[in-house]
Image (cartoon, rainbow, N blue to C red):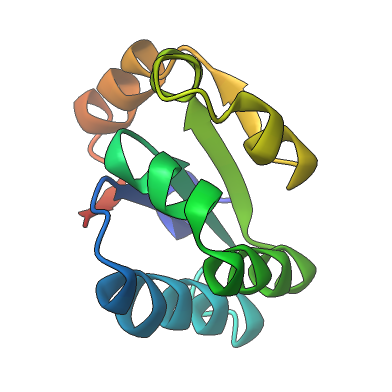
Length: 114
């Protein structure tokens, strides 16, 4: 897989409308319709809280995962916001996110921030 055919989306907003009608809609379609070989969503900050509190967003994540979208989240944020268990139940990989994000930026990969 060509690294330029991978899209990374940094999701930081707690806004449910943006999450549903931009982030999840675009990411799921980009993966299903093969606009990119791979789509990764990085959950950071307030988005982790939104996921934990919103069943509809959780369902959209499960649908996106079925389409092949990969989710990972910041372990520090998830721990601080007390949402680790919920994110892990959704099969979201939690890890220190600073270094991987820095590498994405330094390697000039496709990155959308929301």
